[in-house]
Image (cartoon, rainbow, N blue to C red; front, side):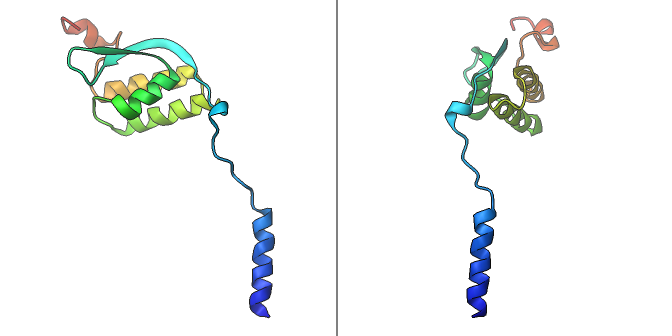
Length: 118
């Protein structure tokens, strides 16, 4: 009898627990921002990133540098910008900071003006 009461109580709790729905692609937004140029995986080739979706894809699949703390924060910022809880400019700023941390070229950086040929 005691086991039946526990089971019934647990079933009532389960009915009240919130149900979480997975993210749907229709809720994800591709926010465009002022382009950023970085080194690619290929030597002597640059990649221009102009949207949050491009930045997220680059961070995940094509990142040529060190994947440090700021790399993870940039990924998070991109996800938040796509779901509307952050701006594209915030994601862009984190992307640039991650690129600096990884020591890859970022257009407009001090390195680009100091090193000939970049």
